[in-house]
Image (cartoon, rainbow, N blue to C red):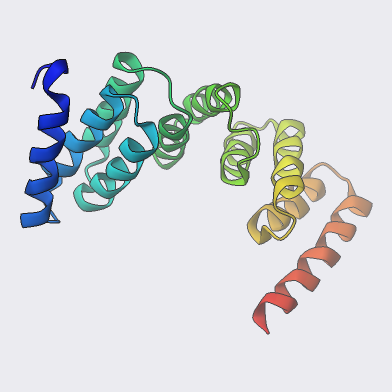
Length: 179
């Protein structure tokens, strides 16, 4: 479908998915069409469904890389790309994608900062990991995984006092959530 026919294309892809909600190609094409018309949230949602249904890491990475090169920048796509790169153990690419997402307006996304922290940690950049984990907790103080990892990184850095403080908070939150 040409750019002027994207509305018609979207209708066809939606009809395809009404008939077969598990049609991987339908979700893939609908994601691309939404992105071409600037509907990045809808595109990201369709892509997420495509990702779950397909499970093909190489195709997913190719799709996202193509989206990054072909369409206007989208914070949602950059976050998805960062998570994908994390799964693929491509830590410098995680950081690149998520830093762009931050500049596109995702400065209040705890998942973004948590993923960024994991990448920094894997690259041995513990101070940056601490900063990203702290930002995660600033946004979402009850993010248990971030708090747990902050305890670990503090211990690795020899920051026993900070580790003990965070561990106390972690234990209280964990106990509270289990009730």
